[in-house]
Image (cartoon, rainbow, N blue to C red; front, side):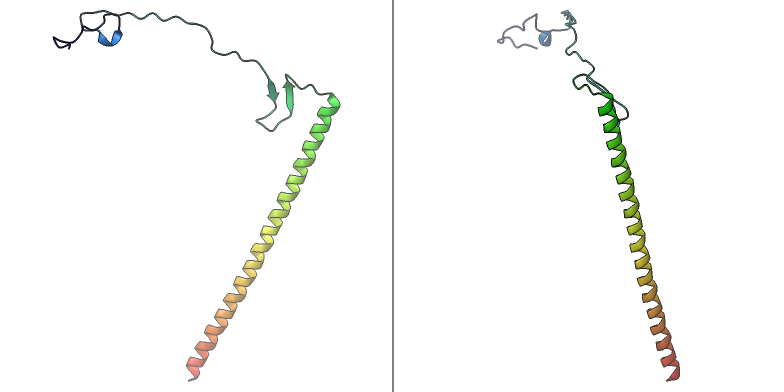
Length: 120
């Protein structure tokens, strides 16, 4: 609490209230802080075609051209993915051939060493 030489706490400041004092706070709503409006509606999440746009207006021909372009890009993507998978499979097969050749060579050396050890 306050020492005898210090000034008394101000009664209207909530930090300085004591047990026997009461304080009240009145809150009032001042309204929303922001207003929102619809700007763009897409089918899907960041990948579909635009169903509505507040600024850009497109003709049905433009929409059809955009869909055709997107379909073409998807087909190219699928083709590249298949080529990549085929290339990976070829590399795996080549590695297996090399491993098999090494294994056979190792077995042949081991068999030759064993035969030479028995003949001596």
